[in-house]
Every structure is written in C-alpha cells, then in structure tokens.
Amino acid sequence: MKNLISLVVGFIFAIGLGLSGMTQVQVVRGFLDITGHWSMNLLGVMAGAISIHGILFFVINKRSKPILDTKFHLPTKKNLDSHLLIGAALFGIGWGWTGICPGPGLVATVSGNINIIIFIISMIVGMAIFKFFEPKIRK
Amino acid sequence: MVNAVLGGVLIGFAVSIMMLFNGRVTGISGILSGLVRPVRFDIDWRISFVSGLLIGGIALLFYRPEVFVQESSALWGDYIFSGLLVGFGTLLGNGCTSGHGVCGISRMSVRSLVATMTFIIFGMLSVFVFKMVRGSL
Image (cartoon, rainbow over all chains, first blue to last red; front, side, top):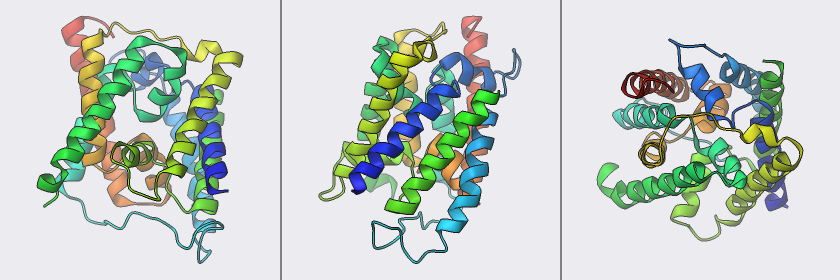
C-alpha cells in the first residue's frame, strides 16, 4: 500500500512538473537569468506548492502518526552549518549551469534526450562520490 | 504563469499525500540517494516513487510532448559538470528544490529557507557566468 501511494505521488509530482514548465531547461534558467528575459514561472510553482503543503502539512502533523507508518520521518537537524551552505551552493552552481535539478531531470529522461541522460548518470555518480566520502565528511 | 501555479498546486497535493500516508518528505535527491547505496527494508517505496515519476513522464510524452522541448547551448561536458555538482551538492546540503524548496519551506524550516535562498543565488550566479563564458544560454 505504501508503495502504491509512493507511485501515485511520483506520478502526480511528474505531471505537476511537466505542466508548470519545470521539465524545460529554458524555463528554469529563465528564472535564474536575472539579466535576461526574467521569467517568474519557478516562483509560481513554488508559491503554488508551498501554499498547499504549507497548510496541509500542519493539519497532517496534528496526527500522532501517518496512516500507513508508525511515525513521521522528519529531518531532525535545526542548526545552520557549513555542510548545508556549501552543499546548497554547489547544487546551485550545477543547477544553474544546465537548468536541471533531480526531479525534472528524472521525469525528462523518458524523452530520450541524451544530454538529460548524461546529466542523470553524472548526478548518480556525484551522489556515489558523496556516499563514498561521507564517513570522512560527516565526522 | 497560471500553468506554473497549477502545476505547483499539484505538487503541493502530491507531497501532502506522501506525508499523510507514508510520513515521508518528498525530497527527490534524498529518495534517490537511498537507492544509490540501498539500505534493507528501505528500498521499495523509493523505487515505487521513481517509477511513478517516470510513468508520469511517459504520460506527458504522450499527451504533452512539448514539455520536453529543450533550448540550451550547453554541451555534453556541461551536463557532466552540472550533474556531478547536483548529485554531490544535494547530498552534502541534505536536499534539493523539492526537499528544501517545497517541503522544507512549507514546514517553516529555517535550514530549508536558507538552503533555498543559497541555491537560488548560486544558480543565478552560475547562469550569469555561463552567459559570460558562452555568450548565450
């Protein structure tokens, strides 16, 4: 049942990304390109998503546990640290360079675009490199 | 812009369903990283989610193929550089646009708000440098 929920959530998420233009690199970079023809689509997506989840999360979180699990799996870290800032900065540089982030990238692989596929393979390699060095980085 | 907000609303409902039923944050980089080095009993829901994303992609390919038209002057080497940074950076920083930008900000997490502002600012800088080096996006 949990798997079915995950599948449906993934499906709706993908449709949302597609309809909002996030699966197109020119739309994403159009938002990041403040010295060009600035497009606000990405802000619109975030505003739409946050306005819904910002309300529903707090309604859902009033429950003692989710419907299909014994507890909510929420991030526990509260403090700002250098890993968060450096990680976000590296992600931002990579994101802006081509206009792809993980979700839209995965969805767009089905189009067979070779550049997107190269991106996804490189992203998985980047994750594997992190996992390899994680014990040293996180100590 | 209307489509962008509507797409965002769909995403907002999707991540809410995930939280209500499975109690999980829908952070794509986090979900995917759990498959890069799998932990027992924590794999199947991740595979299901990624499958859902791909099936959604296939549905779009049939009904809205225009959402996959890409306009960019980036070369294949750019996609390697970009992918490596996105993969490494999202794990070091514990999240991407979905985990921090949508789910985290909705929970009013300060870490996520700071991370989101950081990757947007560096994304803007990156686009600026790309344009300077290549002449166009």
